[in-house]
Figure 1 (cartoon, helix red, strand yellow):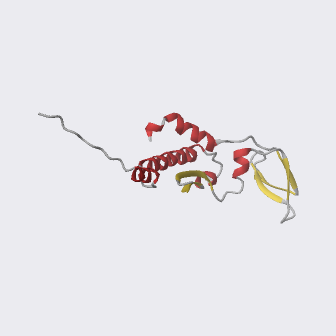
Figure 2 (tube, one colour):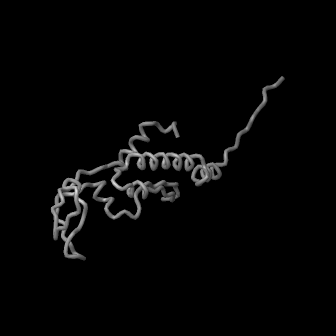
Figure 3 (tube, one colour):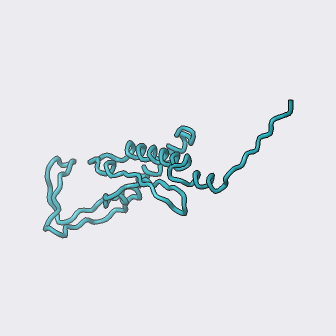
Length: 141
């Protein structure tokens, strides 16, 4: 009995197209990992009102023919100061004569023409979410 011969022909173009396709295995993996990052960011976002966590989104796009997943915060103007921090600074009433807010320490509603914001440390919860998911391992996706 003679040995069987097998000839394998790989279509490089089709293989590359499958690997770069948004429906291909690498793209599906990136989308799954992106969702895990989004869920971790929502879980660890600072919660004063819940608004920041409610606006964490995942967007799928392509860059240079590669599928890319972007996770970030949309439509929350103050998000930059939460993530990057803020130095102490004055806040002055512009559209009204005074700023009115509930001051927890005083336990009452107060009004001032201006206040001195003490600033805040950066809360890099988005970066931490990426690192947490990466530590869990690529194979966990």
